[in-house]
Length: 79
Image 1 (cartoon, rainbow, N blue to C red):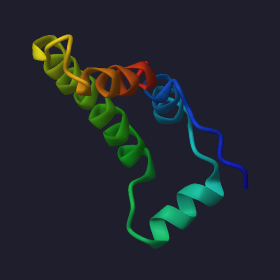
Image 2 (image 1 turned 30 degrees about the horizontal axis):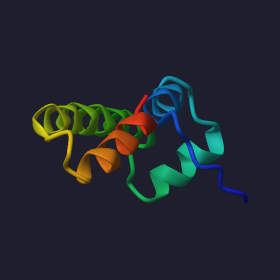
Image 3 (image 1 turned 30 degrees about the vertical axis):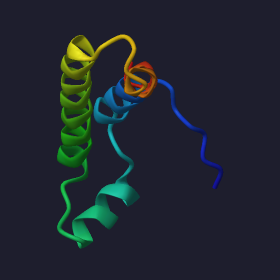
Image 4 (image 1 turned 180 degrees about the vertical axis):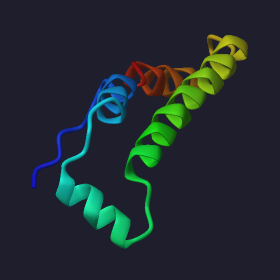
């Protein structure tokens, strides 16, 4: 399996949360007492919360602060 880094985490998570999982995935999750659909929705909510938090941090970070570039990079992936 190849892993492709995502620059659209929220969009991709929304697509995963909004799409039905196949029967095998649902069965596998059920065998481990996992709510796969609920977990996908929770992941989306956590990404949205991370975006909100990082935006608040960015808004109070001094433009000369070297951390600002990292914050902006993280925010750029949360679209």
